[in-house]
Image (cartoon, rainbow, N blue to C red; front, side, top):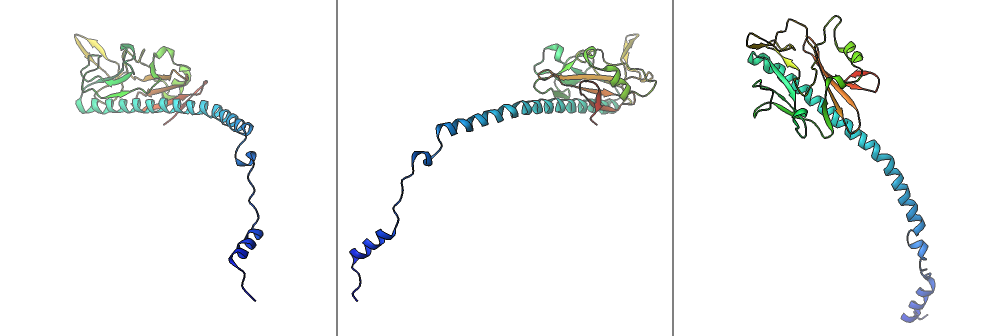
Length: 226
């Protein structure tokens, strides 16, 4: 038997091989309606996620600011013991600082000077006047020991928490031309900070024994963070 010719082999292969079918326009990709549905779902998901993410970011900024401020208070306490002096931690919101800062007033002038240990408040977070803090009685009942008097900073933007040479909080007193910071009277301090963009509050307290704590307000009561 003679072998098939080249032309016969090509003809057989073309017969066996199914013809390719051209894809229709609907099979080639998404239709306009399908694309609109996908975009709509994406927009709805974004609308649900963005507010949650924004709230989380604001909470992080408030918490990080509270932690930095508490750390600055600890630095002031240690520095007061080391230098055998008293030091106040002052926030500068009343002085128009943008963003607000807090610093250890090493020179005792009430104004920031180069070299003062400093912390910067996060975006949207600001120190608040003592009188504006919410649920003060609830906060004091938790961090103050029974029978202790609360001598708190009236306005953190003016005269903030102060530590004496023994590392205890004290209230500066001027007499006979000299200003001292006696530790005999139990003294405590409260600094309120708020994220003004979301309205959340935190507080940093100093007990008469010198313990520094951070607190968060849930709208009704305060709870300790450390």
